[in-house]
Image 1 (tube, rainbow, N blue to C red):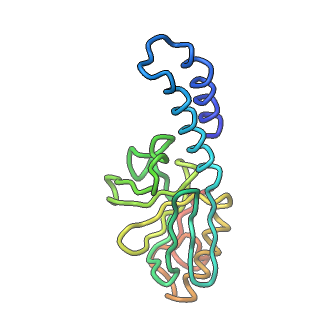
Image 2: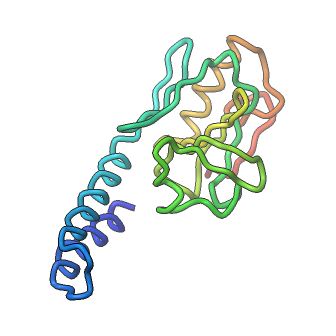
Length: 166
């Protein structure tokens, strides 16, 4: 994904300033700055947990959820959820998207092909921590301390699981 942003920024910086078809001479610089902002947002995506909250964060957006409100932890991908993944799906400021499978979802991710869908509150959250199985196990352990076993929990060694993150 970083390579895609870099290529787009280079195209905007090298090709567009020399185009005679532009209506606004500053357009390449505005577009380049916007792409650079999206690259910084992408690179700033982080996930953290403490004893009370799961936090997904990036510059100018993010979400924090109570672990006591988590109802499901499952492996999935943005591609499985609907046609919103990839570079275009990650551009929303808040990360709020709509998918045909589950409706609204907060998608704060760096990888559309594999992640964790955390069902919490009215709007689930799709995240992509670096080590999916380890993150899912730790999230599950912390959630179980509040709610007990969940019906769908890929991080629970004794609960229902899905090995699709391998």
